[in-house]
Image (cartoon, rainbow, N blue to C red; front, side, top):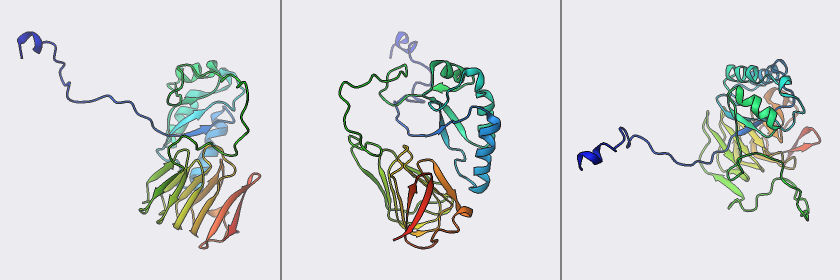
Length: 249
């Protein structure tokens, strides 16, 4: 290599590589913009289900907030979430003014892979297709994620746009999440979140039902609230309005 060429070699050029990535994270949809309302509710969840969302990267969903930027305390929310060991990565949805206020608090606007640079409401289709109940799994290349090994404590598995089928045990302290249904052909002792893409028709099936937390489409129950559930039995969990129903199979 000539001296001239050596002058153009960047120090540490072999120390890293940049690659595009596509990662799935949970969305915390805010229904209230006040930290003094949101944070105690999350803290109460943590006390009843230790480890739930701990150290989880999340996006803050703004679509349900019909508020002005002055009515949302983004710095307070960020500080409070981090104090609960939740890692806020950015925001999704909401008005441009809300996203700008979030950016001032260090929360960048996130967008789905392949989306346009600015998040704007999609134009109404000329001819709407018939509605499809639940999330549309077509085009994802798969309809289910299959896990054949036990899900260990501290692990988190997320089946994006799919059902989750586990042919082993979900141990206490583990978390399994699916946009569709969750099937556990073993003991369910950890936390299970089905219908994560707001699918109220999702179900949770377990051969040995003994979870720390169970949730469908945002409605949840923790272990202390499962006294009427058939613990240790083969169970299907479904959503009936805003209540979870536990049915023996």
